[in-house]
Image: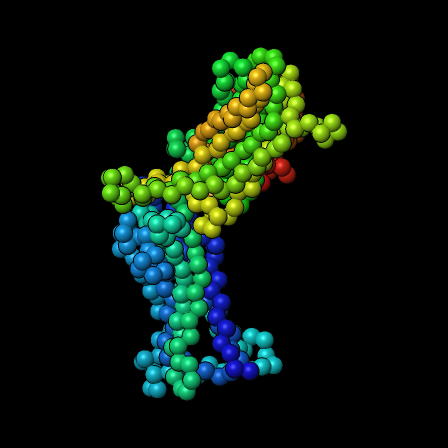
Length: 375
C-alpha cells in the first residue's frame, strides 16, 4: 500500500506562558514525530518547525505585534551520505518495522504574543513537518498541527489572586426592585458552564415580574487602528445568553406578582477558546473585555413594562489559571508517634528533646481536592 502517514505528538497540547511579557520566562516545547510507511521510501531530509500560520492579511501579528515566528529544527539530513538519501523500508506484516520516530525540542520565548482569533485578524501557531524524498511522484510530504499559546498570571501575584475574587453585582431601581447576581469567582474557564445565582427582591408592592435573563458579551478593541473620527476599531458580539420567562403555566399568566423574593440559578454555556470565545486580555495593541449582563422585565402599577439591566465585567481564562490558585495541602492524619511523647515520664518531658530522637511526621494526600470546579 502506497502511503506516508505523519503524526506530530507534542508532550503538551498547548504552550503556557506565566506572567506578563516582561516577566515571563521561556518555556520548552518537546515532543516527537512519528512516520508510518506503506512502502519503501528514499528520504533526503526531514524538518519540523514551530511557526505562525495564516495569510499576511489574516495575521494580526504582522500589524500589531512583533515579526512572525519561524523556528526550524532538522530531524534528519542525508546530504552527507553517498547518494544524498537513505532508504526507509516497510514491512506490511511487521508492526514496528515501518515506524520511524524523531524527537524535537523548541524554546518558546516568554514575550511571545498569545494566540487570538478575532475579526481584526489572528495570531495562530502550528507545528509543521516536512519530509523530502527523491524518486517519481510526490517528493515533499508535509503535516501540520495547530498548537495554541496562552498566557496566565504568575502564581502568587496580585493579578492571579484577583481571579478568585467573588462576583457581587447589586443595584436597585428607584427604590422599588433590587437586582443581585452572586458567583463564587469573577473568572470562568472556557469550554465550561457559568453558573450564577440571580435574586430579584421587591421593595414595593404592586409590581409584577415577567422575565429574567443572563447574557455574556465580548468586546474586541483594536487600539492601533482608528476610524475617521479617531476612535479605535471595536467589535461587539454576544457569546451566550439565556432568558427565563416568569409565568404560571396553570393559569396561563405571562407574569407573576412580585410579592416576595425570587431567586434562581441560571447557567450559560461558555464555548471553546479561539473558536466561539477569546480569552480576556489587555495588550498594548488589542484588548478583549467580557461583560455579564442581568436583565429583568418588571411591570409597574400602571401596567407599564420597565426593562431593568445591570452589568459587571468578568474574565474568561484558561482552566489552568484557576487551578493554579488553589493549593491542596496534605493532611496530618497519623498520631501514632505522638504517644511516644505523651507516654514519657515527667523528667524526660522537662528535658529539651533532640531532633534526632523525634520521629518525622507522617503526611499523606487526601482523595478529594479543594479545587473549585466551574464545569
